[in-house]
Amino acid sequence: MSADFAAYVMTETLKVVALLCAPVLLFGLLAGLLVGIFQAVTQIHEMTLTFIPKMMAVALAFLLFLPWMLRTYLDFATAIFSNIPNYLR
Image (cartoon, rainbow, N blue to C red; front, side, top):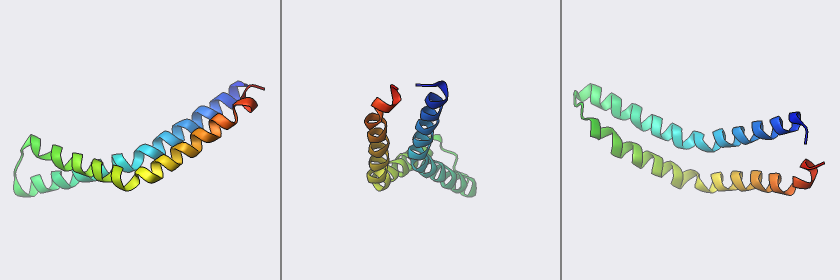
């Protein structure tokens, strides 16, 4: 395996990781932003108020995107493992 090919595999791995993390992180970010706006408008500055909505948003993101995330991850893992003989050349 050449260094260029190893760099390519690592780049693809990082792309898949970023792609899989993006929906969950975006849901958490959106929930935090909405709660922050709500706190600014109502002048309620309770630190624990942001925790539950963020956790619910992340759980919702997992429920919505888990089938797609699993399919994407399994396709990538299958491609990596099925090409191991090619990598060793």
